[in-house]
Image (cartoon, rainbow, N blue to C red; front, side, top):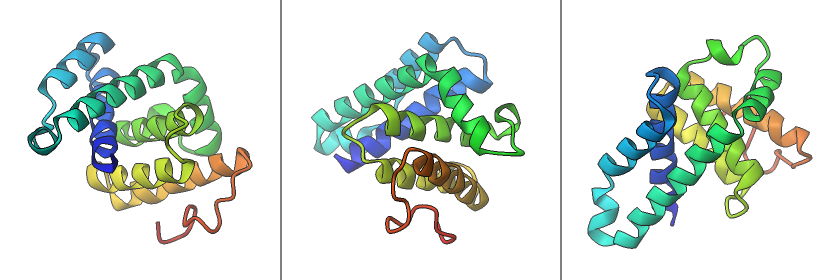
Length: 158
């Protein structure tokens, strides 16, 4: 399940990036990404997991689109000095995905959404982006009344 969810998040990031930066209509970005996603590693051993990844990616990307104003409002409030439209597109879409999962996907524990967001930032952006995303999301969890201290979230090393 972990590999399929990680693949799903990366696929959702691809969809949102194309929509956000390339001006591709959302439905076209969604259809193209789902059709051409390289999930060969999952498909070879666990075809059902590849389908779960596509399904979760579509759910997340569509959910982010539907709740965009709310998600961006949280990001703008927490990323002081970094307006959403001035953030790197990868970073803002990773934040959107993580906050969407925290708020709307009950099967994903908030700390997992944060950890996965940090890992995606390190993979697709920069180490500094990982720290930025960690700080924003730790602040969001604090606002939600979640204990972020013993979880490794919000630490300087993340």
